[in-house]
Image (cartoon, rainbow, N blue to C red):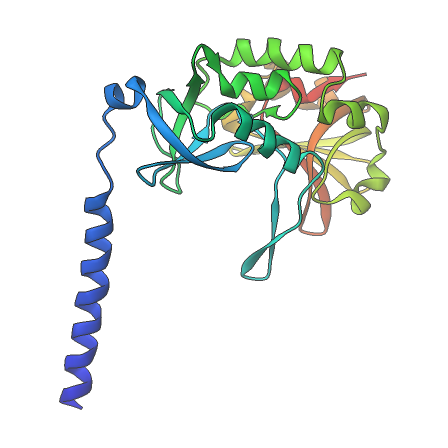
Length: 265
């Protein structure tokens, strides 16, 4: 019994020691150093890269189609439309090159990745991904320094049907088709039948068991009437929204991160 106890103590010390060693290997986040230039060794996907020091960088302000989806407790390779194209475009811009990082309010996300605006020469890669139609705006307060620039870039991409916008604009679906498009980026036209506002979220309940969800930290960027009187602003109106369709508690929904995702028809 005592022998097993000693073995367990040794295992715990080894695990803790390994974790501490990994942390010590990670260099401190000195903003000036990252702004001078860092080397991108690997592109993970359309909005994430890995640096030569092992750090992962998540681009601020954008979201690109996913390459993988969760299955059980793991992940499988199942790329959404334009996911591979977004990764390839990102690779052409930054892989094997030196880039500069600039920051907003938050420096890391909950996964420990650096949050940054990435520059290759004079090009902000985040915005270029949006301008060429490989990414959508993803407003995540308080990191909103360049939100107006992202809006201009996305407007240009949509007007020219670039990348993922061509397919979305050509094939707008009804809420009754949401079930067959779970996990896909789609544009949906729906009628709002009721609204629900809590201290955390605004939900627009639509025909066809479809919902539109706006969390409070994003709601402040929508028109004031949307939160002050959601029934007056939305009820019995037709809307057009775009984003990733998800299934949640038996219903189908799109979560809005930016006002550009919503249009009242």
